[in-house]
Image 1 (cartoon, rainbow, N blue to C red):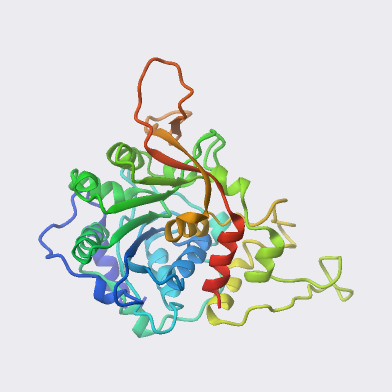
Image 2: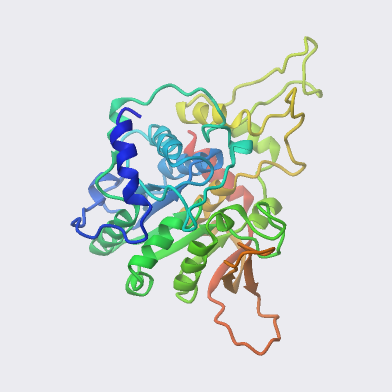
Length: 390
């Protein structure tokens, strides 16, 4: 980043559980409104890996008239915070024409236990598939607001939405540290802001994890913060979870992925007669080209070292599905009301999202008010993505 030195010096603000409260609330409406009176604002908290980028572009380029992205907050997770900020700004560069881009705010550099995960094995060393992207322009770099941190940005967005009579949805696509910092420093926030909903991409309700045998990556990356979030928000009736197992069950089919984000190969084989992959371009917008470039290594058909990286069902793009659910809840086909507790203890089940589905007969009456999405309309998800890439 051009402001590299200042950016690094400001990271000290992001590791404390108590964010600065001396900053006066700043209205974000004027910085992120594609229409005159948006009724549904989004604040997206992201650790900006490849699937985050697809979700961010989906949100930033949606043509749904009521939806506007108020702000973006950055967190460690798939890669370092410095990389995440750069990656988020690359996404913001592709905001739909005529739309004022949202500001980007620094969040947590490490989790509550002082640890950070490493997902470079999937997202690449830079978090965006090592796609060798061009440098950011000064105009895009200026969208990084180093004076207002992630927690204050959430407070400001809630205040702006309330003043405008709008709904705010906070969408978490990475570790829940920033939101954990919010509820730790402002415990009354969930109860005192009934116009604010929460969509979490994270957790696994069936115990089939990806970061461990029973825990999902985002929750396990900061289990203590995740526990604080679910403890604070769980009984509000305003939390929706888009889980790991849902994404595995409902991926974007490969033919749809190739049409929107990937390569369409000619012939039955994966390679042509000259041994080279033949591709057909179906999208030419800069946003589509950007996503194709960063997805190429992650969802490649054939790799000399790693072979075929494609699963049988389709492309699992977790964060894009979560954003789709947030901007258009009609994407949800089925859901269940559950009670969620996060196991923050050290041990075999660290980071597990323990759900009560209403079939537990241990004599404890738990409030089941978290909406756990169990099925989606993939066709609606695909349509939202296709719309964003035009």
